[in-house]
Structure formats: C-alpha cells, structure tokens
Image 1 (cartoon, one colour):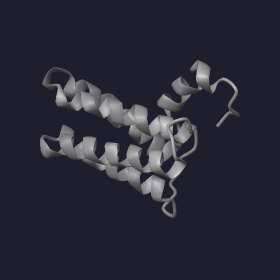
Image 2: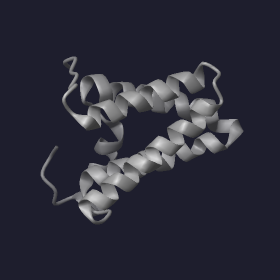
Image 3: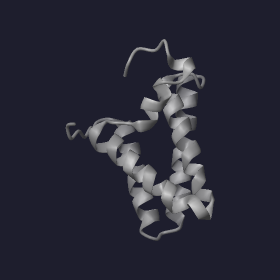
Image 4: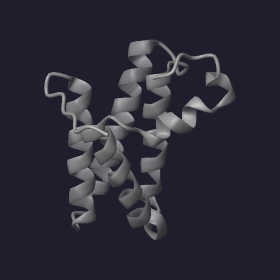
Length: 116
C-alpha cells in the first residue's frame, strides 16, 4: 500500500473535505454530522447528474457512501458508523483503497465490469 495524494483532482479534495467534516463531528461538533451527510448527498447527486444515471460504478460508490452517512441521523449508531466512515474515507483519501468499491464489485450487476 502506497501513500497517495492527488491535489489536482477535485474528487480527492471532496474526499478530504468529507474526512475533515467527519473528524470534526467525531471531535464533538454536532453540525459536522449534518454537513458530512449534506456533502455526501451533494457528491452523489453530482455523480448521478454527471453520468446521467445510477449504473456507473463511481456513482454507485457515492450513492452507497451517502446512504451510509444517513446513519448519522440515528443517535445510537452515529459515532460507530462515523468511526467506520472515517477509517474508510482516510483509506480512500490517502491510499486510494475503498471497501465500498470492493463490496460493490461483487454485486451481480457489476460482475461484467473491468477491475478498478
């Protein structure tokens, strides 16, 4: 696994912003939860609009991620879910590794896609 940053890539900045919002939420700033959810939903909607649908693999990742952030609305699981999202977002941001993409690759509708 190699450390990787991509400051010229807008997607990288979006993941970094999401990571910072999650960190702020976990540090006690309650608005951080809602801002993380909002950014993730906007990110997913942007990809849906850009790809004109929900079947594109990158779009599926953003939709799944946004759906997971919605658990932040449930106080009982908020911290645990955001700790998991923090770990995953850290891996995506700095090591280009994504557990959601690995899971989605195994879904039946993605079986004929080239590995990413």
